[in-house]
Amino acid sequence: MFTLTIPVSTDGLSAIKADLTRKLPDVKSSHRCEAIARGLGFRTYATALAAVQAGVTSMTQVRGDLFVAYLAEHAFTISPAAFYHAAAKLALRDVWEHTPKLTMWGIGSGGPRRKDDGRWEDFREMNARFKEARSELLGDGAVKPFLASLAFLGRVTPTKTIRKGTGSYWLKHIAENFACSYPEGEKLGPTYVANGVLIAAALHAGFKMKTYVDNLGYDELNVSFNMSKPCVEELDYEVRPDGARTQDRRHREAMKRNRHYPFGSATF
Image (cartoon, rainbow, N blue to C red; front, side, top):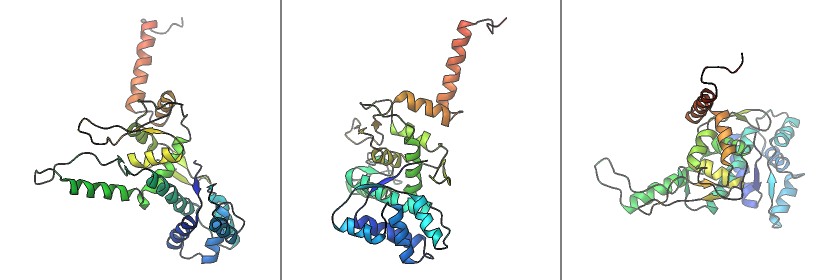
């Protein structure tokens, strides 16, 4: 389960309304608007509009249960997932706007790649690849992994300092194997998580990151966070019981037992 908070603004309300118009075309427009307001903590849609038009922009928790409850009162049976997805796009865009190098795959898009004809990409081609990877982060395909990552990160303990051993690529592999659900119980994960989506979720959740540059001066895709490495390791053992780290741990524990009891069990 995750907790999703978003900044509420005039543009944000319009974006959620437009997204739900596309995804829930059978729901009457006025009912959609009122359900959105309830799901964002407002008494009515008019109240929500008045607040944002007055410049009162604040972070609010997204409540899918209140969204669907209002629609149920008007004979619409709707999954809360559509509402969470529309709201999550705002959260993703907020991180996207504040992190200009963030793409679907991490920080930047790596150095020049060799093309099919054997030549290397020039700057124009690299920049086009970067822009495409950046735009992918705002697409529908990033939303569900973003929410699943938030659910996973809710289990991670923050630290005061950024730890080198908490790389985003390792974390994204745990996140995409993490079994989780929407707050109302509908299944969410496991689901594939791109490195950049995990980074976006971590930044949205309040974690800090450290970026790196390779020996040629290009941004490395992976980052490190202010997260407890022992906490992440325990989560990895739990989420991936057959993973390489878990197998290594079992092997070390077995070796330790054998050193203490070389002839088998100490029980006689």
